[in-house]
Amino acid sequence: MKFFIDTADKNKIMDLMSTGMIDGVTTNPSLIAKNGDDMAETIKGICNIQNGPVSAEVTAIDYDGMVEEGEYLASLADNVVVKVPLTQEGLMACKTLARLGINVNVTLCFSLGQALLAAKADATYISPFVGRLDDTGENGMELIRDIVKMYGLHGLHTEVLVASVRSVKHVEQAALLGADVCTIPPKILLELYEHPLTGKGLDAFMADWANTGQSILPQGHRGMRDESKRLVLGPDDGSFAI
Ligand code: G3P
Image (cartoon, rainbow, N blue to C red; front, side, top):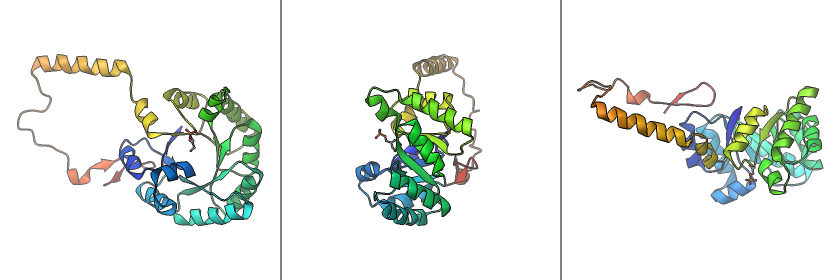
């Protein structure tokens, strides 16, 4: 399962890129507004620092406006994915943009029927919002299970991108259910590393090691790593020089 990072904050993306865990980025108008910077500049900036897919959402809600904005957003960088809302006009725009060779992420999906329509409109990704469904008393992950099953039954190629992720459990369940992508807020990604027994175990190892008085590296050992060739993990080939 691919990990996208759900933020428009370039600094947070840069920090998390070095973990080697990030395969792409998703943004939306609320995240852009929260960040406070110009949308086109933000998207270009994010595309510059990593080459995974970057979802940029249209803000028009009519067909012509969405296609026009979509074409503009796609022109900003090769890895832009245009995000359109799951409305009738949004799916018409999706079909047109797909015909133009532009990858489209259909967002604000809350039902199986909507996910079926998005696949028929040639969406590259469908984004069901699990957290917002949970908020209404439904079970968001049940929708993921059903979409994965339906796409599998019909051989549909649209990728299931789990969005509105609120917990580590959501990420774990998305992986278990066979989702293609999970877009994760930075805070939740960092929580994925954590387990109380890992911290406790490490403390015990360190305490026992300190008692031995040993050091793995011999005294006077000179570092063997060339800092100028320090590598940061990237999404495709595993690494790129910084
Ligand atoms: O990118 C869309 C999305 O993940 C929204 O999440 O937490 O605002 O429901 P949230």
